[in-house]
Image 1: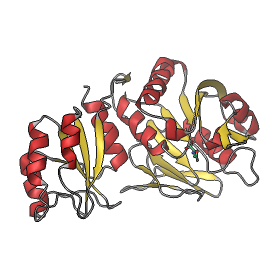
Image 2: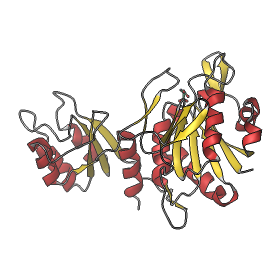
Image 3: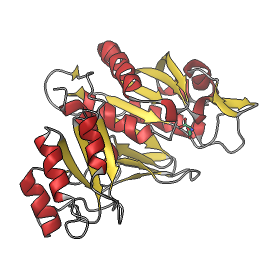
Length: 310
Ligand code: ASP
């Protein structure tokens, strides 16, 4: 049987009721015991890393997760990380960007309902995460509901739906059909040939700025003053920046001259950024703003945090 390390980090999946609502209270070992048939799938060992609502998870927690996986990489055939759903897409993107040359499955999962609630999705999600962790997948992926998603392509779309994570711009790696995983592909986040390694340094001075109609471009001054190193600019449609009454180009030039990297993303979910179509994109690109291509905002942010420390 394959040896899988289950890493607990908190979230609804691990939560129990309290006076103030659901709070993480179950460790990974307890959760593993609650899922029927899990012991027949894998030889499971557990590691409790943290017990947080994922809204409280940030770069230092991604570092602990990446280190825990790197330290144990040789000892296990795969990994299952249980996590809150709110920031799970960010963590999947962060681990995909921090872990390199992954040849083993690293599966992140969560749930909309706690393990103890009637009709919960938690046990099923853990079960299919383990199915993924004993499969031929190479790299970081997110397992949720009926979908196994590449770690750089996941997005939380719904606050309650059991299929609340979607795979953006690409088909999911696998779907659950008639109780079985049907595979499309097995290459996931951080896959590569060569020796596995982890980049655990992250530049935290990276901000996401969402352009909205009427927003003045001098909001960017704040990031220069505060010493930011990267900006993910969430523009509209094919990307680019407003260049008429409110003209973002001079502000963009100032930011780029200050040595801040700027990555243009789009507020559209699908089809990516195309800075070569309109002056709003072409002019921004000429100044040095880069395109996020088909990356989600979550993926662009986490990749840039890693790249700025490489
Ligand atoms: N607030 C919870 C969390 O992200 C929500 C969940 O897990 O579904 O930790």
